[in-house]
Amino acid sequence: MSIDLGHAGATRLGTTLVAAFLASLVECVEALTVVLAVGRVRGWRSALAGAAVALAVLAAVVAALGPALTRIPLHLIQLAAGTLILLFGLRWLRKAILRSGRLIPLHDEEVAFAKSSADMRDGHDDGLRGWDKLAFAAAFNITVLEGTEVVFIVIALGAGGTGLLLPASLGAGAALVLIAALGLLLRRPLARVPENTLKFAVGILLSAFGTFWVAEGAGIAWPGPATSNPDLAIPCLVAGYLGVALWLVPVCFVRKHHAVTVED
Amino acid sequence: MSWIRSIVREILGLFVDDGNFAIAIVVWLGIAVLVLPLIAAHKHCAGPALFGGLALILIESVMRFSRRRG
Image 1 (spheres, helix red, strand yellow):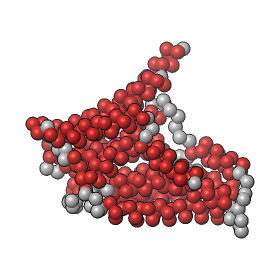
Image 2 (tube, chains in turn orange, green):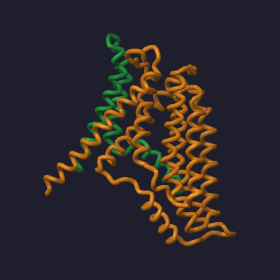
Image 3 (cartoon, each protein chain N blue to C red):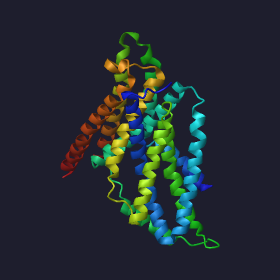
Image 4 (cartoon, helix red, strand yellow):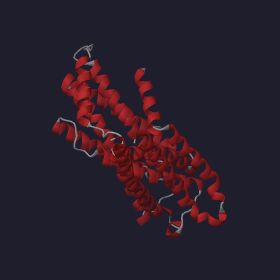
């Protein structure tokens, strides 16, 4: 399947890039918090080396898996990637709705930074020749763990059609460069990044993409102008999920407030 | 090797938070993929039906959680 680079094709390329950028931004912020804590407490050399080795491993995974996916029939990839992206995207969206509705607490980078710093202070140094093994392992682990999510997002978004792996990789790469630059500049956790708002937006985008790809893979048709140009279904799906999510947030607030009032 | 176990746990955690929610999504997708393309008379409703089912699963899951926590 080739992608028409007209208006609709540009829509798909653009939304793929934005979705990969925003999703990767969230994961990079979480990884940066721990790498900063490791670097501050145990030293920058081992922390940055651990993160760099992990990034090299992840880049190798993308380089190996990305092209291999092109050998599998597109509709099977779309069904599999669409299902995984839906599970991933709807999970993020559900959590973001529950956080926005104050039913579960918001993620706090300052708290995560303090906890990681305390863990690093408690750990003893068993490194050799100037390398801190604990710091290297901690930075490597968090970068691989959060980076695995980024790799999944890039591969799943890139698997949706010919030529989408590049914008997905560019989006993730831009997020990594931006967060790394901010981290080096500020040397403190990016607590002001509106993580839940980002997760809310990414959850909506990924859910819309997942639904679209499952439909494409299964040969499911769309009504109206999207019948002849299925790409037009993507903004409609984004609007649909946004509407449902925005309706659910106040419902959560009301339910929580009602429960508190009844308890009082 | 504990970091490999952590990665496997992390990968599984990417997709499954609430087991019932994940199962409902997979079951609905299975039904939608097998049945919706066959409904030739209303085939242009298939896309919105796919979205509608997923939206209902999301709504039910959030409502169920808010009942439990509320």
